[in-house]
Structure formats: structure tokens, C-alpha cells
Image 1 (cartoon, helix red, strand yellow):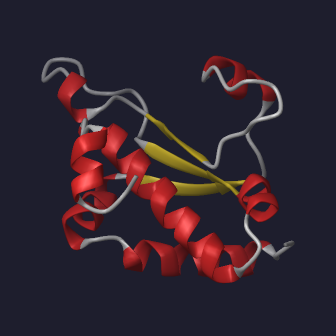
Image 2 (cartoon, rainbow, N blue to C red):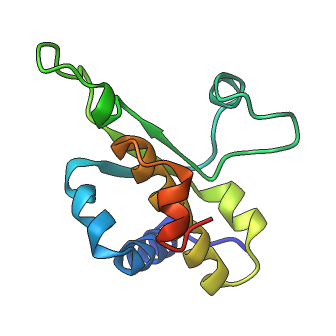
Length: 124
């Protein structure tokens, strides 16, 4: 699958609309950015084995780890990687679902939500 950046943005917007409101409320405090692909340095930093890739990543300081005295220097951001998602997904519906799952997992990192809580919300 190969989409224009504009088409991909539209699918991301649709995926964001599908996220449960309890999680979507936290998106106001996060920037969501689309990038072509993760670079080799990020893959190494994240411990991603050769031949595997990332669909997205949260960058910032998770809420539970923040200090009231020292605010973060940079805004919290979720990066969505277009090419790996396009390569993995065969249909627009599958792409939208994978983007939704990716964003929810990255918001969970921001909030300090564990995998059990995500499972309770229907995300594995």
C-alpha cells in the first residue's frame, strides 16, 4: 500500500476518532506527527532487532515521572511512521486499526498506563 501524505493524514484522523474518549481526552496535550520511517539511531535506541521496525513512538517525559520543579524542555509527541504501517497493512481498514492501536499504546506510555489496563480497554 502506498498513500499520499494527505491520504495518510486523513486515515490518521479517522483512527484518532475511533479511540475511546477516556484516552482521546489526553491527546490535547500531545503533538501527533507523521514521519516517513524511524531512523536507524532510533531503532537502535529502542532496542528494535534488525529486520523489525516501529509503527510509532512516544517522545517526552511520562506524566508519572515528571517533576513539578523541572518542567519538560520539549513538548510530548507521538510519532507515527508511515512507511512501516503501509508495508504491514493490506487494507485501509487494517491501516486505520493499526494506527489506532499504535496511538493508544503511545498515549499509554505518556500516562504511565500498563498493559493490563490497555487490555481491559480492548487493546492488546
